[in-house]
Length: 378
Image (cartoon, rainbow, N blue to C red; front, side):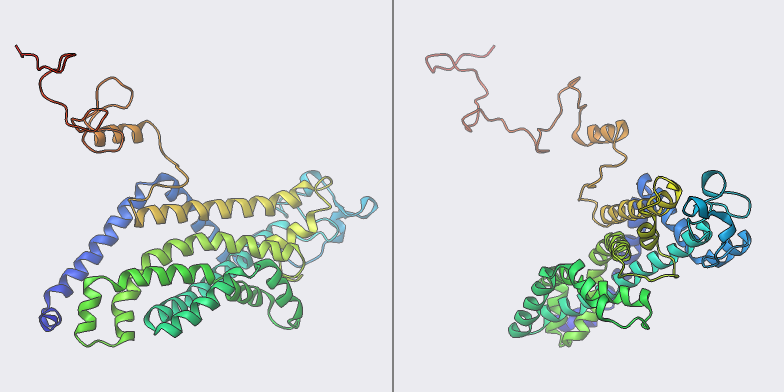
């Protein structure tokens, strides 16, 4: 039987057709979520701004490191000269207090650092989690036990404390954005590895994996051809939610002074320097804080939309976009309106209402009198 499964070319065609159909269904479900589409547009715009930072600052005629002492009032402690923090044709978002560096240039270059560190850290987490989770599942009992215990230790480690310790002992000559990405990725992969291991255990029980094993395929060939494609959906979903979390970690590390070092701009570093200027120059605090808020919110909504599109049976945690149209669709699915204007065909659980009484016994089709005798029907 296994030889027939391997020799038949039909499953190959079915697999490709199923993959193409699954991709079309995913995009259709994702396009149906307006909040996810808006979030995807915002994320794409942020990535475009980060990539085009040199071009945008060249159009403005500024750079993120040049000091402009003449644009700050030294008598007032370095407050920017002019209205709204020195906003003008030469400085689109004003200048930084004390130094006079251009805020727009530092903000767009900070986007490159924050997004780049978060994406690189997420990539490191995914690679380590896939290797550890799949190896624990496909290895023998001792390999599974050792890797599972290591994963539990990693999950129990406090991320911020370990990151502070590692970043404090590394020499300053090492590129700081690369170091922050590596530290976050090497410490925060435990939860994803547990998810990969659990999903791989589920995939191992499927018939096509058993057929491949009976046909003589090796362990790593089965992992490459059968298991890794099945892990794509949960990995994409969880990775989309890891990116905003890593952005927050990078901002927190920079805020604590162990992240990206000056003069390299970073949103967390800008927040660190702005904590004493929120009254004299509020835009210096509001701009990086607003950028962080919009980025994390957009990535979170997009990640939830991807999760819902990949698994349509799961309801959206954010409950975005539900309204009268959603209620109308729910009424159509249940066979009746939800406002009591008509009786629905189904009960609250979605199943047909049984012809049973309160005691659980079948109700007779004829009425029953008080003394238990059947009444004649007309």
